Structures are given as C-alpha cells and as structure tokens.
Image (cartoon, rainbow, N blue to C red; front, side):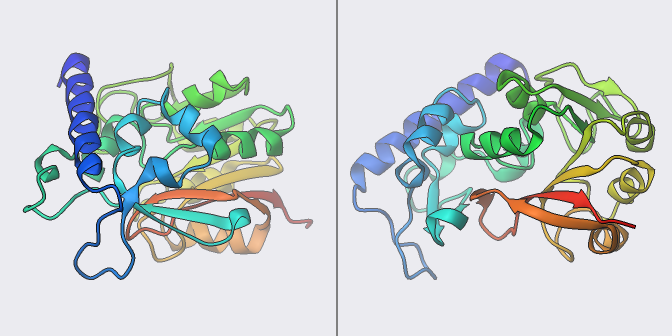
Amino acid sequence: MSAETVIGRVAETARRLVGYWERHPDGVLLPGWHAPFRPLGDLLPARDVEFAERNPQMVPLLWYPALSAGPDTRRVIDILDHLPVDHDAASAMILRQELSRIYSWAIASRTALDWLGDRLAGRGLLEVGAGSGYWASLLRAQGVDVLATDSATDRNGYTDRFRFIDVQAATAVEAARRHPDRVLAVIWPPYRDTMAAEALDAYQGSGLVYIGGSRGGLCAEHSFFDALAEHWRPVSRCPLTLRWLGYDDHATFYVRRAS
C-alpha cells in the first residue's frame, strides 16, 4: 500500500468519524458497556490534543470511541478500534493491527514523550526492535538523542514498509551490548519471543524504559519479566496511558538494582 493510499484512508476515516460524533454528541452506549464511549479527543488533556493533531498515528484515533478511568496522576484511556456493524461509521474504521503495522503497536502521546524526556534528563536513548522508527522519530523531534535499531529493517510480520526515521540494522543483543551509555528502550517487544530478555541480558547500562503489557500478556515472554523483577527497580510510570481496549499497556522507567 502506497503512502498516498494510507494517507487517503486515514483522512477518510477521520472524516467519517467526525460526522458520526456530530450525530451522537452525548456519546454512544455500546452493547455490554455501562458507560458511554466518547471520541478520544474529548478525553485527552489539551496539550495532547494539540500534539495529536500533528501526529499521523493520532489523526484518526482522535475520533475513535474511547473510555477514560483513573485519577489524573494515573489516567488510563482505552480506545476501541471498531463499532458494531449497524453503526454508519463502522466500515470506515481501520483496525488496530493494520494501524499498528503502519505506525507502532504502542500508542504515542505528548504526555508520554514529555515524561520520557524528563526521565532521560539529557541521556541518550537506544531503542531495540524499533520497527518503523515511529516512537524514535517523535522523540528525536522532542530533542532526544535516540538511536533506533532493529534486526529486520525491511517489511516483516510486525511492521509495514514505512520508516519514519533511519533504523539501523542490528540485533537487539548487538545493539544493547554496544551502547551501555544509553538508556535502553523496549517498546512492545514481540510475543513469545526472547528478543527483549536477550537484550536485557546483554545490556550493561543502568536505565531502562519499558512500554508494553504485563507478564502473561502479548509482549515478550516469562524470562524478560523474571529479569525485570530480579534486576530492575521501577522508579516512574507515565501519568497517562493510551492503549487499545482489552490490553494492559503501561510505560515504566526502571533503574538497575544494586548488586
């Protein structure tokens, strides 16, 4: 699919959903839910909305149905990637898997980028398994010194052919071993794959950011979470989590435990 085709589909999805919400200004109560869904843009802080309007992944998502829960210091917003077939905008929606292959499996926000930038405090970042380089491109635009790497820099099972930044070809182990001076970033590592655990084992630095699901979810496998629990201490969690409904994503910053 060409870039022009993707842009056209994204724009059409946003256009159809804008009209849908104009016809449902009080939200939509969907079967099985006790609270009405509202467009994501209604639930985001103003700074995140402003950022999202310039963020390709977020342009259609601003109009996707969403639910918000939790206090402002730990806000979680769940986004639904479809509507019942009898709703007039249902056919326009691009599903999670397709959007994720184009952009990223983790949903970026201004709050998350600012939070991570603050935690880095000027240190460089190494992202392994960077895929399309989408998160790395957003972080670099924020002034972060970020190096994006992936063992498969062409199209693969997790990402389409789009690249938002130069992604260097390197296995997670090679990259982690070469750059102990950088904070390691692992963002939605592949399910039932040892990549994340192997990168963590090879990495000799002191800082780690993990964005993805918990143990038993759809990220990494048990040895990664065993290593996290044994060798790493969580020191900060992003105050805003945007995630697809049914997943338990979170963004957490870790420091290495003292030996």
